[in-house]
Length: 361
Image 1: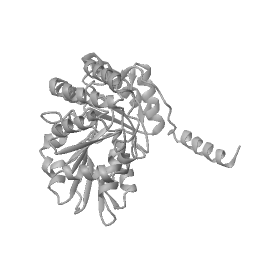
Image 2: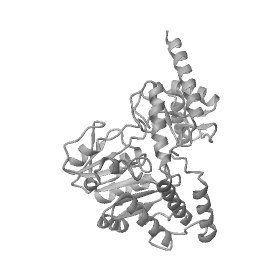
Image 3: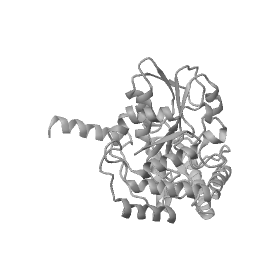
Image 4: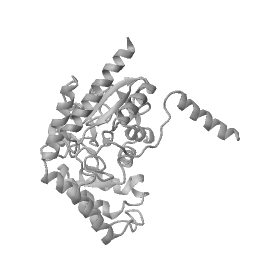
């Protein structure tokens, strides 16, 4: 065994010892771990539109958007999404990760400071690190005294709580908001928490994932025309990435149609979230992300395995995704869940809580 292989095997053993080694596991049981909040990933209209587009446009784009990868359908869906968000323009990226890195590395220069909420997603953290600006982490859910850039999620991915968007929008800073877990769910039209809180005029750019509530993939950066044009000219993740398959644009177009035509999906989702929290004695909220913090890594894995054995696809979330000592189950709800699904989940969690409390005594 080479010294290099030995080093890597040692790191793997350390992960195992700390309860942090992951395994790849296909879906099984009732979905309580994905981000398919509206149940659109298998919606017949979306699936059929995507399949038809594959037959018409082919499986791949074959190049970057600035080469032969550009298609009329990309420009059309960007215009439709910009209208959905109430902005002048939008630009599609192959993932939310790339979109966050593109925004933070393109606009933030050496003399800038990026103020980032301490619980922001890894894509935001990496975007700050890769930029030429200085990064400054501020306490979760507070409002930093900033005159440069502030970046935050609107709905935080692991705790499901909300950023104080009205207060952040009132501050004298350039505000960037990641709406990954809000777009499709909140607001009168479903465009996100920016819409629901009415702060759109004070937000510079928003990052909006299409792979969660919209049920497809990729992400849009939405904002003023001049900013989007600058991203096209200077954002390396856009310039040097092969464009997404053209059929993805057709699927997203169908998803936006479904969101507009079926508002009862997001109404039901938020009602389910309130109901689950009420039954479990948790703080009131209509966020579809419900965390059950267990603390120890091995304990979170063991509890997740128990629930999986009972037919619930719940996964253990451990560092570095969450801070050390806060390993948890992250239950994510969907409008596709039935009343029986939630009743059975509540029963299983309640029984587990009783058993865990008994084990402590």
